Image (tube, rainbow, N blue to C red; front, side, top):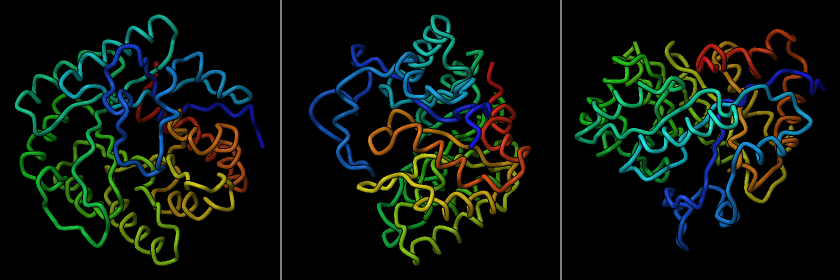
Length: 302
C-alpha cells in the first residue's frame, strides 16, 4: 500500500458554524439523512486545519470543495467565503458551487459563479423519489422537469460541469439529460448511492449505472459509500468500487473522501486504505488516474 501516492480529494466540505449559514447544521432539527443521526457534525467547525489533521499520513496534495448546502438564498455568499478561505489557507484548490436551476435568477447566479477563478462545477440535488418502488418519471423538480432542464442548459455557456447527487433509480433520467445536452459533463456523486447492498439491490444499481455510464459525457466519484452500523472495509465495498470502475473505466472515475460527512462512519485512513487495497492489482498508472490525474482533468485545481 503506497501512502506516498499523490491524492487529490475530489469531494470534501468545509464550514464555519459561527456564520449560521448552513440550515441543515444549525438548530436542533435534522433532515432525513442516509447515515442517520448526524448531530456530531453540528458540534464543531470543519476547516482546513481539521482536514489536514484527518488526512495526516496520506499524501493529499489538493482538495476539491463541494458546496455544503449553504443558505440557498445566497449561493454566491458561499463562494465568496470559500475564496477567502483559499486566500488565507491555500485550501481548497477548486470549487463546486451551488445554484438552483429552477430559480428565476439562475442565469445571473451562474454568471456570478463563473467569475470565481476556482469555480469548476455546480451542484443542485434534484428532487428524487424516496425509493425505487416510488419512482415516477418527470416529477416536478427532477432531472426530467422542463424548467430544471432549461436552467441546466445555461451551464454550457460558462463551461461548467454538473455534479449530480441522486439515487440510482433516477440515473435513466440523468442519462437522457447528458445525451440531450452533450456539451455539459455530468459527474455523478457517491456512485449513485448504493445503500441497498442486497444481491437484488446491487443488480438494480448496476443496471442503472451501466446505462448512465454508456453516455460519454459522464463521470463518477467513488465516495459516500459508507454503510451505517458497519465498519468501512475493502471486503464490504469491493463490489461497488470495482463495478463502478468497470462501468466508467479508469479515465472517468475518481476517488474522494466526502469528509467530514463520512467521518460519521469511518476515518480517512480506513476509507483511503480501503480504496488502495481494492485497486492494488491494477497498474500504477491507472491508480494514479483514480487518485489524482482524473481530478486534475475534470476540476483543474490550482
